[in-house]
Length: 479
Image 1 (spheres, one colour):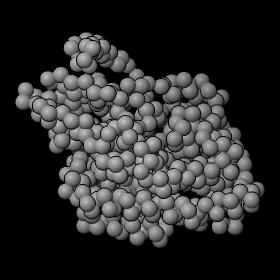
Image 2: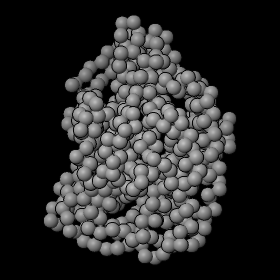
Image 3: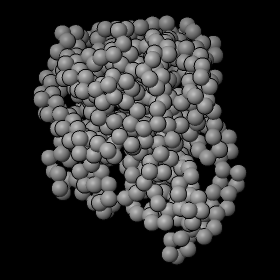
Image 4: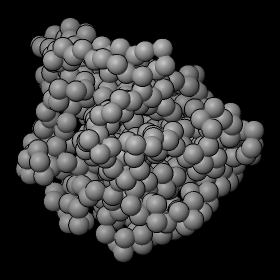
């Protein structure tokens, strides 16, 4: 997994994440960490090969970007299409979309916490990597492992009972939905709620207990302050489906509020870096050096004024006490924030399933091409997602831009692994548990790398020569 020489440690691949990446840790002559780089080494090019397609195809094409958050892509896409058509979805169509989106949030967050990160909390960062995984967790903590699997199943079943598919769904269409929810399926989903609430609350107990027992470690784990971006409702409440955007600074001061997502290019810019396909977005008014911001569960709780459901609000108030009402910068707290969001999603799903209009057949309005440009936004599990389409007069796409959550977190992910590497790595005595802690900083963000890689240009080619003992003996680079 990891090869070293006197000046460099290579972690390849980074494990228990979605996608392919590696980490290079650079050492000085004394074996101390000087820098760390997060390399995303896959390129998919969805934006380019969508050019020439009809804009109406995008809600079907874009869910194929990712098997973890296909619904967020479909929702952002369909909002862009509705802007092109100049229409709004029906009330029930909106309810069904919101419900499916909540289900995806539940499923994705369950995967991140129970399957990918819980082995570190419950088995130990220094435990044998051969068992530090979901199978090892199932052997020693069966209830937790099974609970996480079933919580993920519940989230996926919401989609399946509406659209007939768990992933890569169809049915989210301009103007609303193509499929209604039947009464039988509504009751079947409601029957899941007590179990789902129990599992999420079990996860919250696990993470809070770990935080209490490891307070010193967490207080110093990748705590560099940043700006934060997230979607909020009209009164600043937590929102993941449909709202405007709020930027806050590292002290919690609101920089801009109720920003129209369609104006995203006014406040977000991107630049390329030579070591990764993943770009470096930043908050435009402050420039690249001062404009690093974060998105995702931690950011959404930092920018929000309140949660919309009672159980999640109680946990939100506990979260806000961590830093006396100021933004929580510790990267480890992404896990706690993720579970608070999951709790909110289960509660809100129950509310929607009890709405008298949820099984209505009035699920779609219809329109046609009216505008050449459309921009849609949703909060994917990993953070704020933008789809931007430009068409010709026939409705064919001439330009597509996808600004993905993981891309927006990229500068902070690099900063976090550098902070953790400097804290834990001793180049003169390298232990596997040290390297796992560096990887775990990436897992806090729960990156979705196959979603986020869209940079164009020449990627540096690196060829590494390793001898039979596994030592790195030479490297050739094409810059």
